[in-house]
Image (cartoon, rainbow, N blue to C red):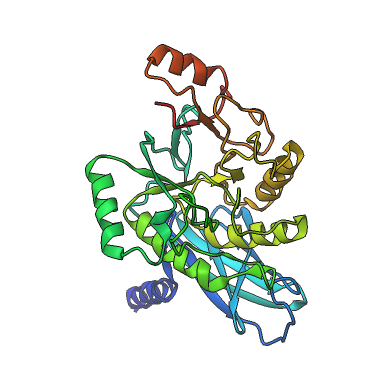
Length: 349
């Protein structure tokens, strides 16, 4: 009889675990929530706050995001195997708490792209796996909705066949319509410049392609950053903070995303769209929301790196020297890098 009790107990425990959602480590846990309150502006009048308790009892704080109607979502990228618990609430209704849990299990994802944990001057993955970044620059077209999935998949197949694991792409976090810089391509228009708020449906289009890249183990470097030159995006600090918070809430759960503050070349001498102080302000905004620990840099002008020791920067993006002389290339890059961080060298040959 005692043995029978333990059999039933074991079956009961197994049933409890089976009823919990199972999420692979480093993948994306997502839960949809309903808020019955009516808001004139749901992007600004309430905040969905979430606290996740990891298996080791440490706490991870994130925010959720509004998707339309009465619906919000919460997302997280679990970084430890075991049982995760969460508590969520809306900032205008502190008494109503939503609780739950999920089981984080092993997966084939190498980890969040990061600094190598053994030698942080190289790229690697959180969790200890090493990586050599081989990046291919794809400009503005890649995330366009008027470019066919079959053409996009052909490019991905070609990248993998030729051992590229990273793409450098501009128009997925911003919408550029300049000649030779996105004109003619329906790239994600994340910011509604009339209503001065995010476009949830446009984010969903962008994330559909991010999901494909994550499944194919392709990393994404946003060379034009969160706030780009000559693009449709927020221009005042309050709107920029809203846009950054919302964007990080949505893409922070992607293991394959690198972050860049602004660009391309935000201090480029002929543009004057950014000042040094503005780039630092934006970098600080992004870092404050970057609770999942994505690498953050800024796309620098050729042979120029004024942000080498910025407190918010965790890797370096350098252009130039443009040369075929490998000694000149080596010393040009080494002389401008932060010696304690990974280096992403772009447009150097």
